[in-house]
Length: 78
Length: 78
Image 1 (cartoon, helix red, strand yellow):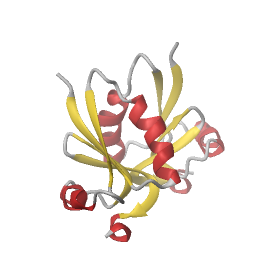
Image 2 (cartoon, chains in turn blue, yellow):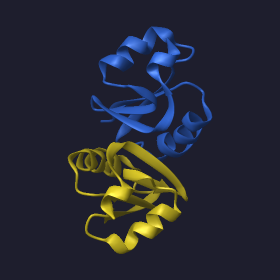
Image 3 (tube, helix red, strand yellow):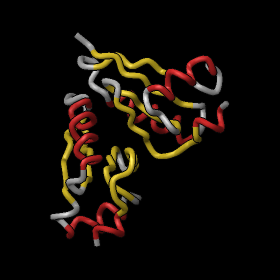
Image 4 (cartoon, helix red, strand yellow):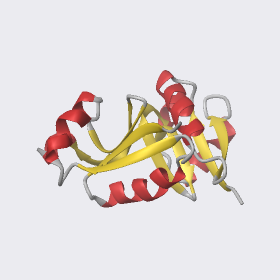
């Protein structure tokens, strides 16, 4: 049974690179990845913050935030 | 045919978290992941730097460096 993972981004070039490489690199047998653009879906900001996300792009796996390189801080998206 | 990916770490707690979650999350049908402890294998530092790695933990996929959270800078390992 696949585990939920969430990839947060903001449409930035750093985000796009990470999404193309990382999200596609995850084992589809292990993870269902939801992709959320926080630039458009501002209602999801509090969920991202609650998971400990400080910047995008970031991937939350099993409740743990992993910041991948640096595109933009969450504060810049509010 | 699997692509080579390299995970660089230095044995730090942030590195261990990333390794457990990330390296195991990658699709084994797509990637062969080599794990290198730069704290012990200092001879690999130049290879990491050449790939653009600035800090560990980091994963290099298809020549692109992805810094995952922040454990230690490469300079601190020299």
